[in-house]
Image 1: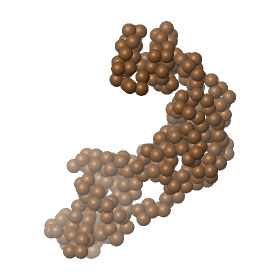
Image 2: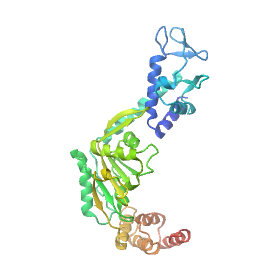
Image 3: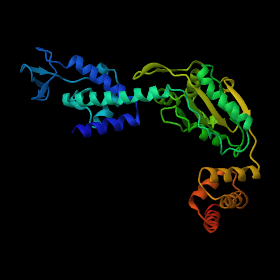
Image 4: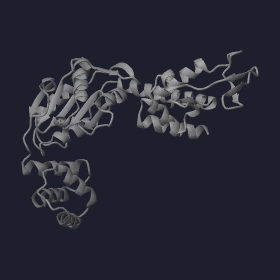
Length: 354
């Protein structure tokens, strides 16, 4: 039963970390209100629907559970915990009021689980507080942009100096914007999101729950939520995430930097755009695209140079692809030129854009 409870709690918290605080609030309420009226013990056995016998002194106590208004949590939260098998219903009123309780033996199990989760979170937070380590081969697959690479590294180092600088890369597809972000995402403490589809909860909760030091945003021009824009502005300027909700009120200080990409600045609010140091990138030439594919396939994928050059030629010239990642994907599937030809032929057959 203990393992079953642990699995349920971990599943809920993994989907939405805020439920950790909700469970703590429920336990705090029960520890205060659900005590033996005679001796104050919290060791009970349930003998009737609302009657709980104290195992310490034998006194029978009446508990009717807690209501959403008493606990200060939204009804949907308590309903969710009930359906997940955490809470139980003690009673329902004719006017729709539902009174819940967390069985006492389950309460103790969950307290232990919460302690384990928080210890891991503390260890993870302390690890994030360490100095950011930049891989020696950072940006190695990216052709050219040597001057820009130096500036990006300086922006990362600005975190140490507590004088943060945010970077925005602007340009059409095939200008290495996404590749830059993917390389930066190799750094511990970074978090890469796709604007507009990052999380259902939004950028605010992502910043609060994951607390990245480097927030990488692909397609910043697709941010549509005014809330997300406001949260970004505040965090970029002050390092604070402020949450004011009926179910969650807190202020978190976790200064970091934003490095983002965009196809255009047309849809980015001026006040947000002004927070960035901006760089406009041009699309790669065919020669540059081939060079990137060969470099990645030989240095990171362990492919023979002759085969890597063959793949690059086929991807750029035959498939007319402007995405070097196509070459990397094909390279992972092939060990011979014949296999490359077969995959190229199949891709042409099933992809009309070719």
